[in-house]
Image 1 (cartoon, one colour):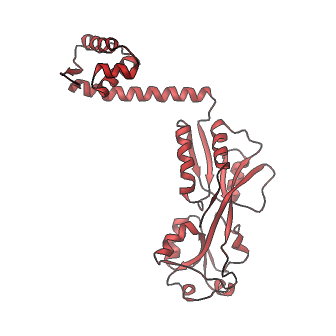
Image 2 (cartoon, rainbow, N blue to C red):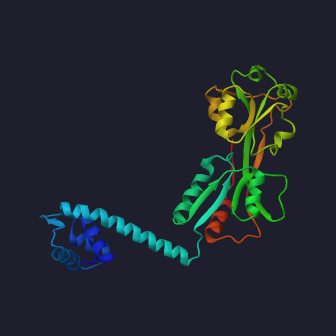
Length: 297
């Protein structure tokens, strides 16, 4: 026998509600329609799906097994309907964006979660790459949006808006020689190896002043932090990333004698290609990000 989605939904709802009358109210149907539909299915299939008790319906073992398949079929049907609606609205199947790893996940998580709820059938690709590669990906249209540390200037085809600021700190392991000094000069820094987050390179505002001739370039924060904790050198890291290590006494924020009261900050920008046509999902995400402003400490 061939069952329709409407019949499957009646079985599912009756099982959830525990009575024909409650299922009828939820579905907006007459009770007689619900009960007769289930009785007809049972008669044609030659099985009993529900035990009729004095108060509540209960699924038989056959009904319980069937309900698992019904739930899968209804879920697939809902997904198909959503996908068709997305196609009709010309919503893109995939959307690639770049989020700088220096930006704390907690700042973007609410927006990403809202996006997934608004566009459940769009595959969101979140990437991390160095600034030059990010600009290239925006330029060729492979990536639609990017949240990046601010650059001094951008190509003419790149639009941008400031989203906020991110504090950065100079740190070293608690037992590093620099951590034993009460005041640190630029010359002191240059005498010890610096661990550099290579995707940022020399683009941070501090790069002109705070640097060493001995450097190790590392392309991810996980390794950079582990090497800092192992005492390989000092590093410049986003404050939200190192706050816990400083609080636990594993790292020390280095006291710079030339800037004793300076809190280094870098901007965070939202970038897009002004010549590229954005799909509905990208436009929605761009508008939401554009209204945000954050400041980290």
